[in-house]
Length: 146
Ligand SMILES: [Zn+2]
Ligand SMILES: [Zn+2]
Image (cartoon, rainbow, N blue to C red; front, side):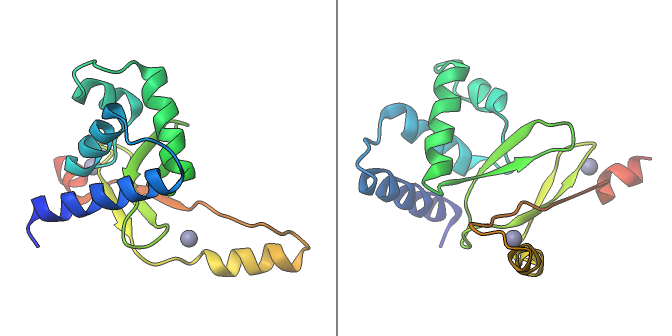
């Protein structure tokens, strides 16, 4: 599949989830999903606003991202500074990331080691478990720039 075809598939999957939830695929939703799918890295709300040429205000973007998150269309990456980035969910329902704290370059880690943590929480009597794990560091590009 070409990159463009892959994008189309991701947009179609997202659309299916939205309509199956009884919601409408509005112009704003479609455009936000397109921007996310074309992006080479996870985006902040401000990035999305910029890339939509200011067509949507931050509240509209935020609300739609919340819908996307609830439907499993996007994943949220919480950065060390408390900011959040958004990316379309990959083949797996959730993934972890390596984030460069200098340039914010992000790599997906397509395996999950959260099971053991959740088993521990479960043994402590906790239910309805979830987890977020991100790894932060300096990427090779940033390190070579010194
Ligand atoms: Zn970097
Ligand atoms: Zn996990």
